Image 1 (cartoon, rainbow, N blue to C red):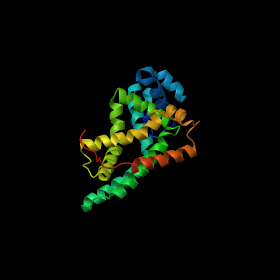
Image 2 (cartoon, helix red, strand yellow):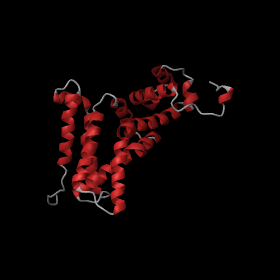
Image 3 (cartoon, rainbow, N blue to C red):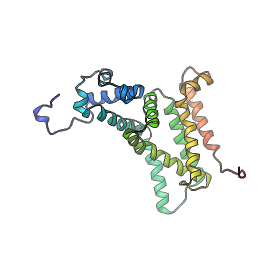
Amino acid sequence: MSKPENEQNTSPPRRDATREKLLAAALDVFGRYGFDGASTRRLADAAGVNLQAIPYYFSGKEGLYIATADYLTELISNHVGDMRQRVGARIVALDTAGEPMSPAEARAFLTEIAQTMIALFVSKKSESWARFIIREQMEPTEAFTRVYQGIMRPMIEIARRLIGTILDDDPASEHVRLRAFAFIGSILVFRMAHAAVLAQMEWETAGPQEVATLRHLAAELVAALEPFKGGAA
């Protein structure tokens, strides 16, 4: 598809409706079928657009795949970005002043993060996100780098900082890194094992009442974080 003469030196508008349709459809299609299984025809049909829209907007399927990773990062950031910036700004302010964060404040921030994430993970909208991310976890590509650097790494590092404060341990230590992943995993399970959770809990869906129950659980998980007091294994 050739561009009109007066547009030869301009890029398509970032919020062009056709481009947005392709990204939204690609997130679902790539998540379901993987890069190799997602033909350009399947992608275009799912978006309800002309096949030539893919090379026009993204220079091909590879470009669309990378753009989908950026799109996913943006979607998640829209849900957690303000919270991440607020917590990050507080950490920077304390570091600048040479003051430590109190364990109580760290628990409050971590509870807010956990409750936000657990509600997001059981929502319908996160299904396609999870499929895409799981595929990239199994066989990482440049798309994983985009998602990791854009959203996963900043959130993990904030969690490490808060958990390190709660445990009175160095956030960069191996122990805190592992505790952070164990904590994050206890939240992620409600998306990654969504069907098993519904079956075990005998819930038909994760509606407002179920989400409220899970938010309470998230607060319990934070409250349970304590320094290890046992002896050597």
